[in-house]
Image (cartoon, rainbow, N blue to C red; front, side, top):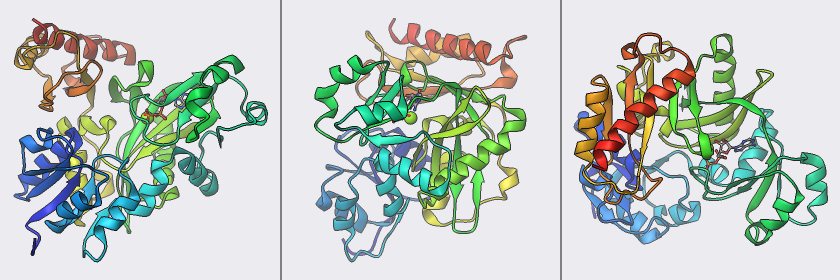
Length: 386
Ligand SMILES: Nc1ncnc2c1ncn2[C@@H]1O[C@H](COP(=O)(O)OP(=O)(O)O)[C@@H](O)[C@H]1O
Ligand SMILES: [Mg+2]
């Protein structure tokens, strides 16, 4: 291909690419995505290429048609991207060096330690286990260094017997062990970092039963918000990242804030911004990828919005009936559906946002908000499976 005809190329065509493309399209920009599936969520809204994300040839085909390149998942091998981009005048956001550090959760931990950013102490999980056990104690968290998501690749070991039982999984290499954080809550924030500025969006509380994000809501964090924002920005600085990042943190019982992990892309915990009445995380992503100006950092606040994820369920049928039921339950809800072809149980299929000004009377504690959001989802599911 000669001259690039697309403004942005996306490595990956899932829901994060889809919603970023929709944001770009509002400005009349053209996007192209690469995904192994022929019917990815992004392919429903813009042209796409079908190909493997670790195939330099497919990546080059995407990149040569685009002015700038970004990604929607952090698992694409840096080496494949480097090979693909040789001699192509194209910038990649996030930078490949930050991507390389982030894709290995042990390197991430080491980057935080080096930068003096608070994060659990971690070691490569390998024999002998005794010194690791001595340094970390139990419970201890065992994690796949590469490719983990939605709690897949995270194990909580309560004793040596568990570590031994899991030996066939970790003894092949590629695992870490880290200190268990007895957090009182999980929080997250989106960070936008450019060469001249770093901006942190509001701190959200993330409710993650079974290690998967279920509901997010504005964190009732009062005096701790600035501290949490500073930690989130420090996490991005520690890996030398530029662009948009989702930063997951723990707040411990003593109030301390500790980094869990960062993602170099739009993030599930930033979906609330689609309905907060300001620029969404996807608008910000598009702007950072294209190097477009951003508004003043102090204007980054909007309506208080909670989000609940819609996961694939057994017996799922017509999602439009789900929309109908959810809106009958809560007409102020805002439904986002990703148009995935298969509703495998547990798969993220969409999400629902709610401006908390529309909550029923007396519903103001975090627990009550979580229950309300889950009730809207239950209504969705009852229509979807009917
Ligand atoms: N060090 C830790 N201490 C306590 N809980 C943890 C720790 N690390 C992870 N978890 C729990 O496991 C979940 C998934 O771990 P995470 O590293 O975020 O992996 P994923 O990439 O799957 O999101 C976290 O959201 C948290 O609930
Ligand atoms: Mg996580």
